[in-house]
Image 1: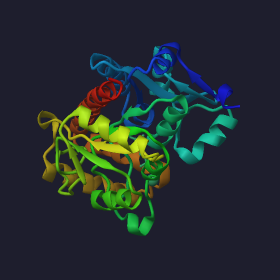
Image 2: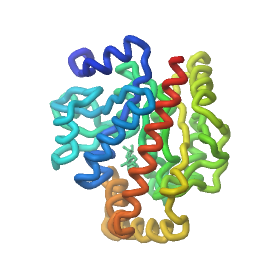
Image 3: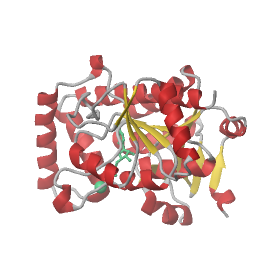
Image 4: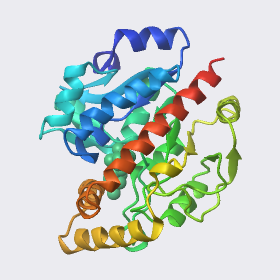
Length: 303
Ligand code: PSU
Ligand code: MN
């Protein structure tokens, strides 16, 4: 059955069979995380960055009810421009496949599809997490639980700063997820490098991260690993300034009654407006940096 729902492009299939370092990339960031044309430029830039660092990129999305692992240029363009592409997380995939629909995959859904295809590495911008006020609203991204279910190593600039990072770390700890700080002792905060929350494990090289992932797989863990990779200094935003903007965006979301799947795209879009494009610039820089580090870890893993 699944055979008919999973389309892996030629290059990616050959690379997986030959134990080459394939790096998955998600599509929600293209369809719902960034405006056009920066979204398509970023999608291409990320694939290029993975290649520059020795990896084979596999961008993942659902097209006409099939999971595509590795996309053609016109498929990327479609995801960047079409207004009817939905946002697929774990709960959405069965109905989208059954209904023959198009969808961009979130971190959770991309992890699921990558694992199905035999891809173990994945770079994103920032994972979803516990939203501010999550204790009341129960808005906790399905991304977090996915780490407990799916053995993929994900490189992320921490959790998005629009979230409650201490609560997000608490949740990851409860789920028993190994969280690695890449050349840092603190969980990165997406737009800036230091959240003030300590990571349980620090690594200072790609090979250290690769060895820890191997050991997790040898232990028979079915869970994934989260690597927190801080935004480069030159691209980081000032903590105080961006926090004031985030508070404004979160208040706007509440006033307009934005809920569920719409929250994260709304906040990212609103922040881009409030900061006059600065937040988007930083987002692009950090996701590119994550693609580079993820490819390096994958290369070490297959050495
Ligand atoms: N990283 C970015 N931009 C994004 C995302 C990640 O730089 O838009 C997406 C990911 O797909 C992640 C999603 O899974 O945001 C989180 O959505 P939610 O909070 O609704 O689970
Ligand atoms: Mn949510």
